[in-house]
Length: 108
Image (tube, rainbow, N blue to C red; front, side):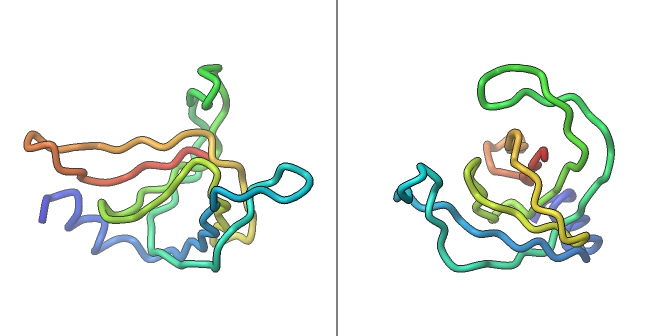
């Protein structure tokens, strides 16, 4: 395990609920979700600039660090520890020198 993975395991005490989006859509064009999955993560409530999926600059109010083996997609629905469900702006994977994913950072 990497140094960052060790730190995330030690300090990730916040629970994030994730509803994974499926490839199906309802009659209103909204992605149908699967059952809820919970992950431990580290939420950083900071204001940061982030690029949205359309390439435009947006404001991120929370960045969430997930372990390297977490599956998160842009259309998933997150519920943060404070009960809010912000839209995912972007997802960033940080890799080590061997090409292995160190951690996943989600901008909301």
